[in-house]
Length: 316
Image (cartoon, rainbow, N blue to C red; front, top):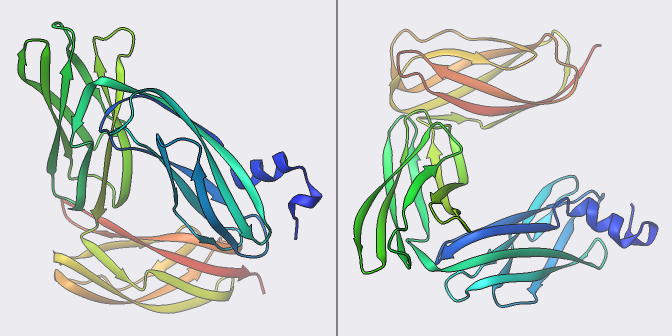
């Protein structure tokens, strides 16, 4: 096992913490502003994060993953306290690790908290969303300052996340805009956390992020979620019973896994619960495998769900 005594402290922290600094940029008052620093356990024993402390009250450090198994990844969260601080701020986040050895790593965050803008609420939170259904959530940006201040754009990083904005009040140096975000029917299943960029006509600080998060739940649930075959010979057929549950009656159109031939008898009638006796045969996969098994339904509104296949393929 490699320990910091065998490498420089800088080399150690660079390996375990691939990202050691983050700039939040310009953010609004009360905006929910967080960054997750990844932590990689490159050692042969479990890693334990004992504590996190910060050099300034403008930032709160949070242990996201207390124990990290070998060759796995966890995270430490730095939260910018935009509700109580203003102006240019920065902090050092010290992460204390006591297993498999004692060491400290220092991470840095910076940002500028505008005093003239407030988001209410500070993020757009969707909670749980059913895949295939469109839903909309809103926030409001409130500005106090220039009479000619305007929102000119609201930018999303995804085609399935559609933002819009409209002015709802203006007068006496105050302006309020309603910000709407719609999650489309084709949003992928899983947890999402991203930022919209609010663009204004403020030349000095035109771009301000607004956090968006939620969980898109698939219409399909697969059991088991983890299909573990262990040691498998190339060309060896293996039978596995899959139970698929849906919120609406469906017909399964395909089951696919890269490097594997997958056979099953397609149901002729749509059902909410389907029991499929499936045969997996490794045809081109080699060595250690971690592959998604993708199950798709038929019809105009086809949806899909995924399970994870693991196996160790050998030729003989």
